[in-house]
Length: 314
Image 1 (cartoon, rainbow, N blue to C red):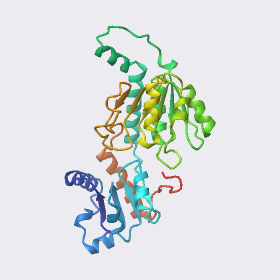
Image 2 (image 1 turned 180 degrees about the vertical axis):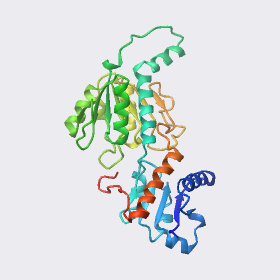
Image 3 (image 1 turned 120 degrees about the vertical axis):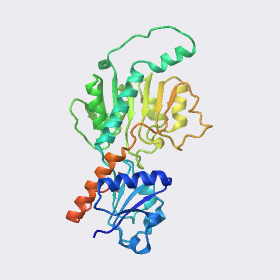
Image 4 (image 1 turned 60 degrees about the vertical axis):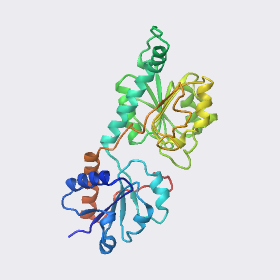
């Protein structure tokens, strides 16, 4: 008889039950129970917690955890809230999530490449005018972040015919794209990209990375897509760059505060597209399968899955 697995979330009861059911279907041999129904003895017995935006106090009330499995790819909030003494944290690495993100990057890159914001503006002004067409090979897309999500996005963009470059904190090699690292590499990518796509994790080093100085390094008339985390971009500086027409457009799926407050200037900005954090939603069935595989390997070997590097933050 294996120890129970604690499901710890701050979501509503219906969403929690949907996750519990998906996880139970993927590993019927396990007992998966919401934290709220665990007895005191079961809390002591639980050696794995599966979490989605958990209350840190609930995780701390499970004294014998070997590791914590996140149901999200991004873990910066989890790392910060659980603290340095928390058990190892395992982030969700799901090929389906990478595919969905690559799909979103391509879709919104094409939206910008085919001048959809300009055509939407023309429609509002009742202007009938064709804009010049350019081939994808003449549009350079610069990817910030070359992990699993960035690599999938790069491959998708290349198949569509775009010229693709990438930047990451550590050196990476990806077929078909020019990669760079360091401050000079970042400046070069920003200066030569028509569309910059941010897929970086939020860490101490990336918070505020795209501030006024770096936005000013971007190619005049370029556009920004942020599918990473809101605080990587300094919002007032971005608005200033858009207002000055140094940047043409920004597609934002992530924000400093979510949901985006009703009084945010971003809602009505004519050069901003606001999305409600939908670029790469987690697929419950696929994610449950990934988590089940991690649990089975742990039960068989006693070794925890690869955990987040707390020094790096991801």
